[in-house]
Length: 444
Image (cartoon, rainbow, N blue to C red; front, side, top):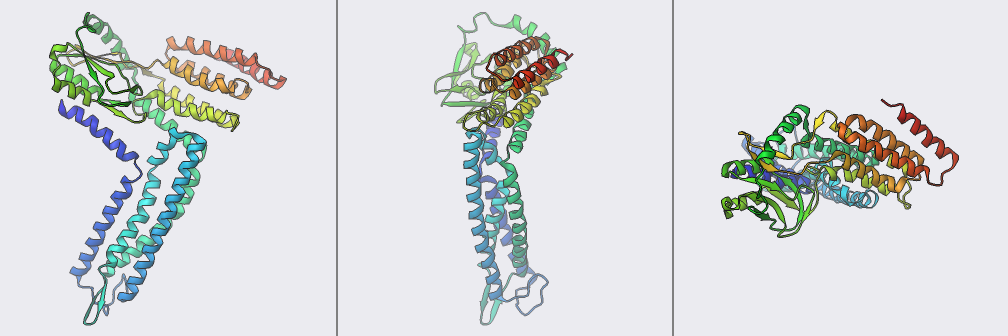
């Protein structure tokens, strides 16, 4: 049990490290420093520290070695400063152009981290090798292998610099950003929505679980409060079921991923309260990860909202870029269409013996889709191209969603078309909307 909720905390800690801009460069620096000591030691053991001995890696004396290492170190720290400045400028541009919610994607960009780490690691490598070069009367020491590897690192850094210029130019394109957001949204669908056979088993389980629901659940339960405020980022469902099974409890998640809680707000309700000790309370609280911002790992609506926000910004009077909104609608259709062939997880989770252990909130697909497209239609209702693409995407989703959700999507689509036709549009826009409606009616 302890190991289960510890894994949840470890995963959250690793996710924070992975999203930080310094973690990968720090690892590369540690490796570079260790490698400098290793190669110096290899040079010492190979007894190649005499300047009059021919060496395939390096043929200069102590002064030449110092000069080369000094030039490399100076160049690397200068370029590293330039790389850092360009990265900060890109973050500022992304924040103003695409919104602050997408900054995390640029911070997580592994390529940017590796590029910065390459130059800093090469700089420190040359410094540590430089301190080992000795030239004096009666003896000298030049770590030929270590110096030669420093030259190799310098050449590799030049190639990395060329790659960085190309990468930073492509990463700030809206198409690249939308593709990355869509991949993360599809990954969230794969994590949160099971295959159809599991959903069918869940329907049978709900019937059994409803009979096991305690009648005095609210009155006989103990509430587990959050120890600090923030957004619920991750909930260890397996850990909670394990705790409930071990202590014969029934748990209810009151704060699903994405919800904001303050200190003292209830995040989990445990029944019966006489079995919930302070130690169990800490274990239950440890299975809920709370952070300062929302993440798309278990928060499907946030994965959708980031794409919606880009569409809203593109339709604002300041930007007036409906083409970007069309790209966003296409990507929303891709993410929401991913649920095709998948089932919504059951609200009631059972243990291995078929006993009710956990009550959770589930995603209502039609509500998520309608809210997302309504947020875009609110700003683009007078743009016939935007409304046309919205309608076409909704038609495709009707075939992907469960039967219960299709009626809601169809009704919402008709409302959007009706509202758009009622606006003051010229003849060309009316023709576009008329064609869209006729096309939709011919869809199977």
